[in-house]
Amino acid sequence: MSESVLGATLSAGSTTAEGIRCSDAEREQVRVVLYAAAGEGRLTMDEVEERLARIEAARFRHELTGVTADLPGPDRNEPNGWRPILAAAGRNLAADLAVLLGRAPEPAPGRRRLLLALTVLIGLLITAALVVGAVHGFAADGFEPHGIDDGRG
Image (cartoon, rainbow, N blue to C red; front, side, top):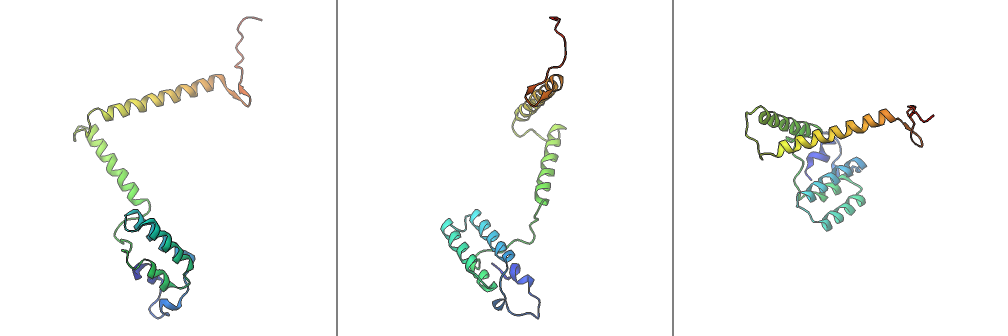
């Protein structure tokens, strides 16, 4: 791991990283880098397990930096949190609107119509279930009688 993650908390006049004990939060930062590297195929599961054991045994910051020294650090330009999710949703919505307005060709002919038909069908089924529930009512032991006299007396 590069000095950017752990070294960022050190001020210019402080002790070197070798003399400072590591915190649980710093250990978690290193775990995140390891999991990302495993997800990218940079590490095997055996390597990840061995490095996780080294993280737990580490007492000082320099021991943590050694665990990920051969891995790339986090990309500071890449957005994090909800931003990538919202950006992807916005792009998808814009693409869908372009198709619906006829400004872009449909990626797979018929798929959107099928999805729209299924969505409408599911909506109708849910609405019907709610109407039946509202008409009949529900009680703790099942359906509650609605009080309509059937004329039998």
